Image (tube, rainbow, N blue to C red; front, side, top):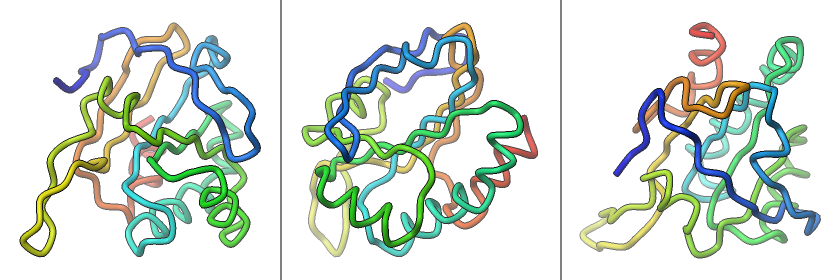
Length: 151
């Protein structure tokens, strides 16, 4: 089940790349762009992360928090964030529990093989903690700019 606009955004606590425990509720009172992506250092995920990086000053100017979530571990996130100079937090969801709650941890197919993984999805969460907008099966190249244009 995927969350839809008007639903309460489920709170969570996940570690960032430095081992700090981050709660979604830490950002109550601010708009949050919560984007789920399949894997660090893959072509589409790199394009998406760079899009958020390149537009980050515009997000900051609007007091919008950007959080990326994947099933990668802290070491992978650290390398990815350092390599791309990402100014926002990447959170570790190694078992896909938060992605499952948000409805984007699904059965996927690639080269004839089936596996469970994150389907690229983004949730804009309003300052009051409700889902404001959802983006499912997004195009990574233009995604960050698309969200800004619609907000």
